[in-house]
Length: 452
Ligand code: 5AD
Ligand code: SF4
Image 1: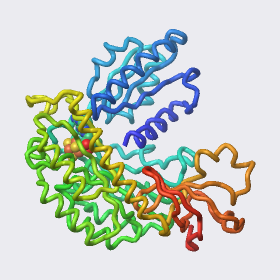
Image 2: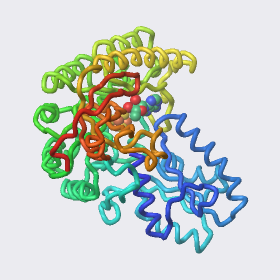
Image 3: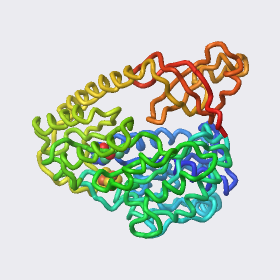
Image 4: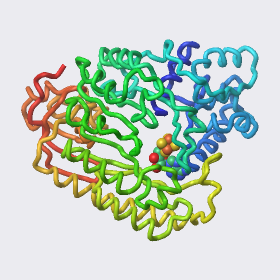
């Protein structure tokens, strides 16, 4: 979500005449987009901002700005703590950026704007597509909703992103169509809890939105993130069996395998209810890849609670997961719980989860050796990028993703003709012959003929 927001911020700054530069030392404005989901992310923000004081001393005209969730959370406090910071912009205030920047340029003042709005600004340039070349151009994010009303006990999002609001489906479709005409082939729809998309507004449900996006010509793949297990509806599950462009992957954060901890977390589902949804998903789409988020060391988590999380990881057999040590976040209910776990105990549990999953991911990837995967090409592998012009196209090592979101690097054997028909945005059949924990490696066999 922050990657998407950073694009919006860059477009707002472009309205004030600024262009992006890779050279921070020479920038006129440095804008830091921040994340406060965990304590560690927040600490990184302050240490990075601290290092910028040196640049401000060299150039007093330099404008240093912070946006995103830490800015929203800290507001004025951030200005006080960082004397060289000029601007603190909350998560709902980006459309006022050109005005703020102009004021700072002319009046040399410092500004804090952390007002949370009730509506989403859908005016230009918020629905403007990312310009070609801003990223690989083939895959892009589109926000469909913002905020969250769930108030999980550990989570800062409802406080820093505000109430849940969905965008107008017509605007989302227009944004995706514009991006497709700019070369995008895969869209990832973003929201804290996409399952409740449109519930308040009543215009279209999330499965209905997906069905409409599935009709867009030139769009090859649709992904979304994130779903809350309690709201994962049968209609959405069935969409995996019906919509040909919907990728075979769902990220379904479970957080813990213990009912007691799930209760304390205010997740509002039980282990059994979660497992039932996993079963349904696999019935509708047997090849679906399932990934999750785990928090270890939530206050009061006993070794038995933790064992239940390890058991659940085993039982579901995830394709991959993200795991985090619990950290207190401002305003959240979990901060008031007693029985906090020491850092080293959390670190040991984190390690155990990560090691367990690493083995599982590797086994799952190894099972794909010898199969053929359809890969949406995102570009040349990093290693080759700088030498692209010097080598023949059939020698290029390409990379992309499978529908199940696995990264695949591949070469074409010899056939220069096949090599020539591969390009970013092409769908290529790749025979998998090597498997690692984080990627697969193979050889191209053919290019799907109905590529756009
Ligand atoms: N401590 C640790 N992990 C957290 N997450 C959210 N809040 C916290 C916290 N206070 C994790 C959850 C969520 C992911 C985005 O970040 O697992 O799904
Ligand atoms: Fe945070 Fe829970 Fe909302 Fe996800 S659903 S953003 S974990 S409050």
